[in-house]
Length: 200
Ligand SMILES: [Zn+2]
Ligand SMILES: [Zn+2]
Image 1 (tube, rainbow, N blue to C red):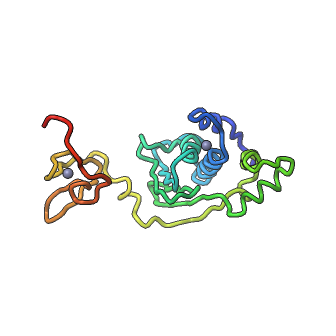
Image 2: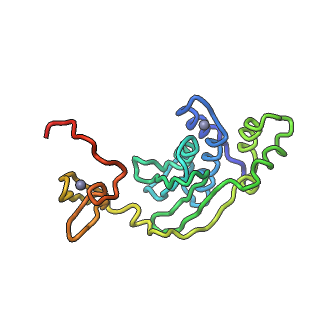
Image 3: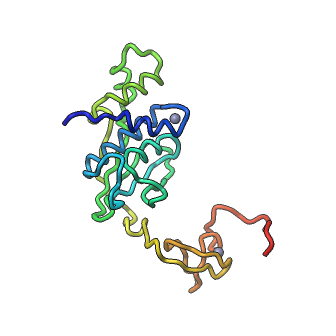
């Protein structure tokens, strides 16, 4: 198979930043390989077929987005913040899941690949664009612990929190003692309230 031209995707990713970095390149390469594995057109996600779960935020995830068309706005991009350059792609209809990460020896491969470049950052930047998939990436078939239907939930559903009264969409409510509660009111929030600044 002819090597794909990754430049348009690198341009789209770096346009969101003031630079192109090795992590964006890895994001693009990982996303493009996922498209190839699942047979989706590069950069597009027709029928919202793929869900991408990225294991870190930052530049890397922009590479994944532009290469797969999986976005937060389409509810097809999720963050599991493990601080890793890796992503799992789930085919939403079949639950088939493939995790892709750089090979653990990828830095050494990069320095071998570009011996003329003594600066490690630039060696990686170049090599990650040209190394073949087999030398750059590790691919794992994985099983999702939480079914993808659960992760995606039903987007149309709306309920009201019985404590704060705010609306909860996407089936993210919790039921405690028969009461519908939002995550915050159920004690599983990410913030604590200091003061209400608006008139109620
Ligand atoms: Zn960067
Ligand atoms: Zn609430």
